[in-house]
Image (cartoon, rainbow, N blue to C red; front, side):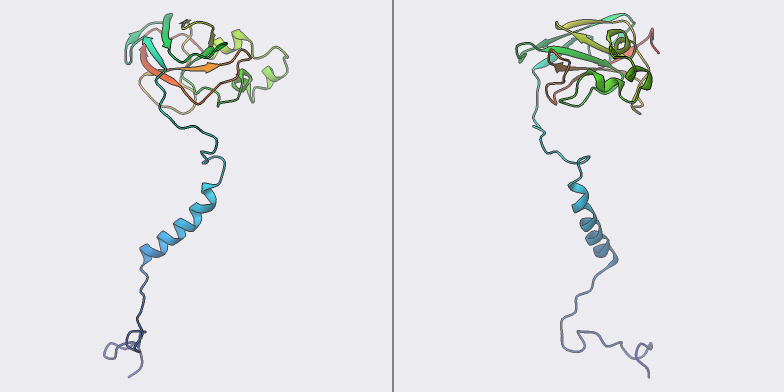
Length: 187
């Protein structure tokens, strides 16, 4: 009989007196996944280098409350227990705030019309897009733009972050409240 027929066993390392290691398909997939992920983990898109991951509850949004029904215009009010001197605030409606270290021009990136104007983005440009700058812990929201950034939700999102006097975001901390805006005004 030839090797491999149904009646005669195929010789293996065990039948020759050595211990055999069998590798299954799931083990091969695991090794391939690990080898693939090691280089990807170093990519900046997935890197957490430089982030100070911590819980921060120094800002508390007082009004409106989470899931409240509101109509534009409405006032957003918050408290800040950890306000560094010279801090201003950025209130962002239905979009993500700029990354830490970036300034307000981040909201106009890739906007060719705005890039041609030396004073852009100005307060009006930002306000129309749901981006508001406050020197105090309260601001009126008059315009509620549609959701930007692929977030699909029934509620509108308001984010408060700290910025410096030049409009540069100070840290990773962000404070969020979600509301149901009945009278929608915006772009």
